[in-house]
Image (cartoon, rainbow, N blue to C red):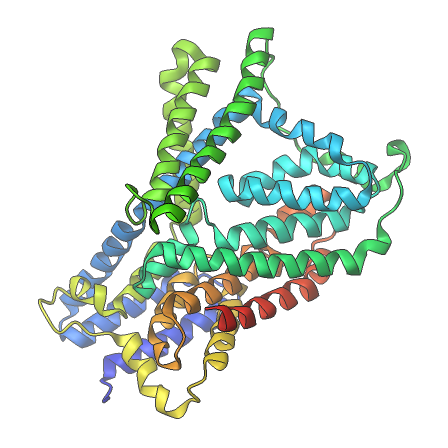
Length: 473
């Protein structure tokens, strides 16, 4: 097809955005400028350029606001559980399982993965590092190997699928024009493959460093962790301690029951039964709100009205800090999709698909091979993850996945491959300027040492998962 000047301009700004990500700089500025100039050139009016900036961000906000809500509610619930002290009670029984360093490694993997699926690694890491890592070190697991287990299980395996909260698959799916559930299910399978390879390979590589039980008084790694800041809780009386233990049981059982119900309904009917597309996360969010109300009322009584508001507000603040920059980025890549460009450019028909058309025009010069397409989008995902966020590249990944359909690969599969590449890299498993810093800090190990230890297991896991995607899907 014949490309217009706005098509080439869109391609140029896409390359600028990728280059900016590689340099680990913010990409909001080029996305906003790109939206302005492309709309101005396409419509022939500078006024339309200004209008498109606002409309692109509005469209993106409308499409993605459900993400902000689920993050808000889950974080508000966790903050309420922390106030009550229930978070510690949920973890403490697991410490008894850490009888040696080898078992401790896999216990850290399992606990980090489960907590990260529900509350994201941002919330899981301080809890696991403060309560379980010291026990693992006493059992003989080196702090660096403990950090590897936490990074792979949380920042990599759990976050790359994001199967419960579904922020990542929603971002990928919206840009790709496919159902969120399709991306989420395939990303879950691929993340488990990548995680299984990475966890197993890391254990093989570093198992010789695992020691027998050590004396905590003479262990330097435990001393290095003494500066880890733990939250100071309020003094609790017997009544609140009882409620703390009760909620430590009720909350995980309730959330597990929700997941079991969703899985059962899906297996039973092939879809979420009464839960329509996207309502799975809404179901979990609604349950989280009721648990939030109950736990706050138990602790605060007459002050519950104010504290529920505070927890919700804190949740929104965190959600906008974490996801706010994604909105203008998504707006730019929505402009490249015919599904959204008409609304952004105020067109009634013949909506342009700048990115799709641009990629399609190059298909004649590229080998039409599903293996090449899968590896290419994985590499692009890894590159876009170099900015250290893990999420800012997902709109680009989704848009590219939608434009590579001539290779014979399913769009949802390509989006899932790119998603795991982006998040394993930038979400906190491969780059030192990501949230991997928090894990290294909590565990008392140099962040660059942690990056080096993660590199081979993670890269091998990602490439094996990509090859598996081509063969399975």
